[in-house]
Length: 157
Image (cartoon, rainbow, N blue to C red; front, side, top):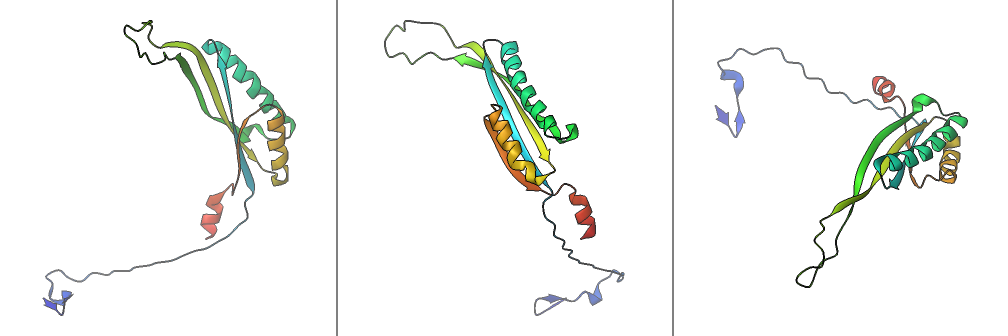
């Protein structure tokens, strides 16, 4: 039955049960303790293996540099690796008959590798970026400052 738009459940056929509702909010704050930096090396080659070899050499230089700076192996990971063909495209033909009949064809390949790095010494972040740039890594991203173990903070909250 409804009185003034409010339902009265007192007359319901079902017996009333025990109901407990709890709401809570927890807050905690912390300063970031890790900087994440990523870089992508992308190289072209006439063949897939040429593109891959050229990219691998540049990535290996960057990885050696990071290890020399004291970055742990566990804090370095490849997140993306791709090998894509490059095609020749014919210019549009505005005369008839077109002087060529060749369709698009593969003229080479591009190998790309993206590496993510955790820098645990925040004071070292600028040096990591500068050294990677000096090593010929052109596509640098970051830094992003994060908290390494958010689960501890969630438990504390």
